[in-house]
Image (cartoon, rainbow, N blue to C red; front, side, top):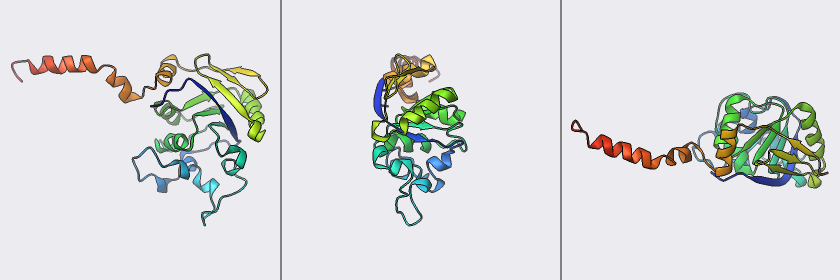
Length: 200
């Protein structure tokens, strides 16, 4: 998993509440177990018409936001089914951070496990960042995970909270497999001791 320390990028405003995982990645794209290749289908039904043509007024289709790395969203982001494909699609598109007043629990946990930083902020702070994000190409926002701060395009700073263990995992690029491999020597020693038992 890629480490997350500091991120400076374009923030895209998605001022919609209750964005569920089927909106993030529709069910017809869940046939793969690959984590790559899903970015082209992110928000598919909002980005594309039935004939495949882009819907011009959807935020990620607008020239200023095609390379967005930060998403500023409405309340209850990631609700619905527990599909891990949702953070996979966001990450494959290039989104490394989602900021919202609240997240669905399973989606929130899946973000950390896949290298995405979900930031919960009070509504008034989200509103400020949403307004900043609407500046288009000038909507550059900086996230400093170590110091737990967000700096807007005008230099204003917002502090955020994050669980210390999850923060460490993101900063070190450790998913569940990476955490387990940190204990590889202890696991090998246990297996060797078990193999030495007379009943083996």
